[in-house]
Length: 87
Image (cartoon, helix red, strand yellow):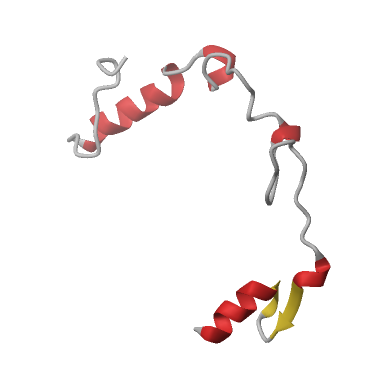
């Protein structure tokens, strides 16, 4: 496949680079509307997008409010506040 899209950032003239980048965008992965072949696990699925930390059972980790302290810059864990004060 690399023969079909033979271009680098140093390819000159710029028109050739533009041509090969456009060719890559339209022809590299034609399956599934450009997403490529079927994946083992669809990571583009909306419900699989998580923010924060997730444990091994796929549960969100919620911090314990008893260990959070307030300082001038906001709320942090107590060990972070201790480390910052030592620094």
